[in-house]
Amino acid sequence: MMKAIVSDSYGNHQNLKLTNDHPLPYTNINEMPKNKPLLIQTLAVALAPGDARVLSGTCKMFNGPPSFPYVPGGDVCGIVEHIDTNQVKDDSELGYQVGDRIAARFTEGPRGALGEYATISTSMATKVPDNVSAEDAAVLASSGSIAYQLSKRFTDVNERVLIVGAGGGVGSHLCQFLKLKGYTFIAGVSKDPKRLLKQPISCNVALDYTQNDPYNLENWKKQHISEPFDTIVDLAGGGWICLLEQSENQDGLQIIKTAKEGGRYLTLTYDEALFSVDSIGYALNLFLFIPLFRAMVSRCVQRSKMPRYTFAMSLDDDVDLLKDTLKLASEGKIVACKDDRGPFEFTTEGAQEAFKIQESRHVRGKVVIKGPSNMEK
Ligand SMILES: NC(=O)c1ccc[n+]([C@@H]2O[C@H](COP(=O)([O-])OP(=O)(O)OC[C@H]3O[C@@H](n4cnc5c(N)ncnc54)[C@H](OP(=O)(O)O)[C@@H]3O)[C@@H](O)[C@H]2O)c1
Image (cartoon, rainbow, N blue to C red):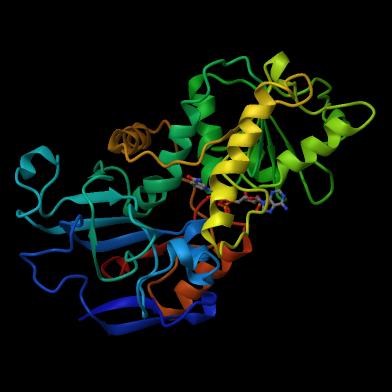
């Protein structure tokens, strides 16, 4: 048995509780769960929108835990306790061994990390450099590496980029990766725009969306921006609908260049950030048909009216993305953005408070919960 944060049913942060007698994540140490040959002692867990979504049950058809009580959390840093040699024939190729600290991103849905022990896959796990803290490593395991992956779609440093959701988990790291690449003009959107202007996010300009519509160029003119942006990265959802409406107006699209002029719109989200999926047909529409339709139409019949649409949905299981991200952090080139209200304790109250912030969609970077063995630190 082990300590774990668990939920007995779908719901919200109030369902979470600490238990001292949750079953260990394996039944036989020499026969770890399939595709999860690493046993780690958890040091820190960073939350993501998917963690709140799994708990809510709105996407249970695809993301739901196989049974209750379940242990939430997917992005983790921990100490390797055991490696199942039945599954890993040559552990010298892993680059880490028992006793090392590793960071890992979930691979089969965000679950299982908020326990004293967790079993994980080797496919998205790597050794953490000594000078990177466990909390920072958990933060960078997913949002950092996703932002790094997204930044690879940026090759022209002269682009003027607008990031909606620049202060969240992905945005706060994407801004840093773009600056590191040499991008000189990044505009950000947040209800706390002052935070975006400070290090490490360091946007050039920032707008408060609770006061001003960020898709209306008039609102940027107050900040001396009168040219349309080259690229919009929408991490909050709904931007494409705003652009479609604008393109139908008398003056046409103002905030961003059209595809013909080189404009592009990248998103990781659906039109509604908080969505529910209850049928395969609906899921196919959301994940496949609508993004494909928009991508195609915006590149041909609408190319003089709309920017190129790209739904950057997939998370590459490329561990090098994670290795490089952690290396950049260890060299001081990027900073893991942790919500300053945490890290939260591995207690019922700590987990509930952390999930409450995640559910609010107003995380300042990433929310982190300490693992039980890390509590005294
Ligand atoms: N498809 C994939 O592979 C993949 C991978 C990772 C993430 N995602 C998705 O990408 C999105 C961003 O992820 P994340 O981890 O960065 O999320 P996050 O940490 O929850 O950040 C959400 C951001 O949205 C902003 N926001 C909330 N309401 C808003 C509104 N009404 N108008 C404008 N901005 C608003 C918040 O801004 P404030 O600064 O004002 O709080 C915050 O910065 C999520 O939908 C997530 O599910 C997808």
